[in-house]
Image (cartoon, rainbow, N blue to C red; front, side, top):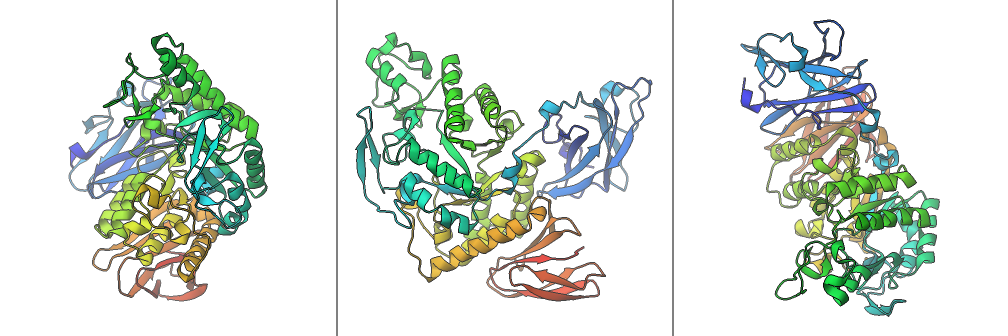
Length: 586
């Protein structure tokens, strides 16, 4: 037994309350090191001297190449729980583990792991609607000016304050509204809009006025009408909140620029040094050294109050359904805890998504965000589908690491993107190879969490640089774009039809490194899907093991039956094809 590989962390994704009376426990061991793992649990304030401990078998749910992960959902009558594990390698070693390895159970319950109290307030809760979301991200300046039209023309418009706002491609809120029917046809039920508040530059991340719509995009009435139409079509709306920094024409920073140390807003910003300088680098903290984006001091009580009011304002005024929060990992945790309370006090099922590129467990404990942008998913798909720099073993190991990062409710609402406004288009990373791109999209739609589409992915938009991957939407189809859009529609429809399976388990069923075949299941044995990826340039013959009583497997995409015999089903998978089968499988 490899003792150094064993890991369990209290009050984390390894031990948490799933319901008021249900706990989830995980333990990590070395790969293929255990024959069985059990968890023993009991009432930690039991009146008896010796606590009666119940046992529960743990299932191996994931392997990342180095480690196996065992998991158990434990129904418990106790609100206060003590617990330990039994680790059995099936050969020569069996240990009780409570942070230490023991050959006999210690009689002192205080030495066991403790789950002090199952508090209902700390059960992780995410909006139910988000679990079934298919997200579409729109860069407002680049999407549409009118129905199926984007002018692609630059413009500069003065705001009421006399400040100038810039547009590069001419997109508007009216343009998005005019194309909601297109989004409905595609199957979208959640929109995430990059910033729409009054700002200077075309990207709108240098906010001037957090309570006004940028004049290049329209006005408040345009936005309210747009949200109403989205809701009429069962589409939720998320706005981009840029609260890590403001623009330098934001009223508070303008006051600091004019009055210097005498400004009553000087403490609203992070580490300003006077006299203020801008060259070679600003004498104040900024977003990425950009002098036009001074960093806000979000621990300041007045700054907190101001932005909590903004967070509530757009829900109260326009009925938005949540926020995507920019540069969330550079803002203090206490700010986000208060932000969540402010938002949820107005709309309990509002959805909060953090822009965090790395592992985000410290932000996803249930007290700050519901979800994070899953850039690690994008990186892994790039290596496997686009670059082909890793094989099925490494891909599966990476996927299992993703699945073990967070608590289950959080995992099922992760924002799974292939690309976004901040990284190159996936199709470009795939060298323009549509087959590779389509198989990545196929996997995205079948994976655990929220598939997020950056506008125009379904039209084959490419781009490696910022201006390129934020280019105007393609509204005129050719055969390639029409086929790709139809492919998206089909996969989204399948995902929605089989939502029960999509909200079920993810289980690796088969890996063939030589032939680059990867098979996994969604749902469960009797009510689920078997999903096949052929990431190779050749047609493959595959045998699927089924229940002995299973007469056939149904091909969901091709709408045909594959007969089964003697517990097996044979079928062909074309190069770079994804198949979805329903039926009873082993």
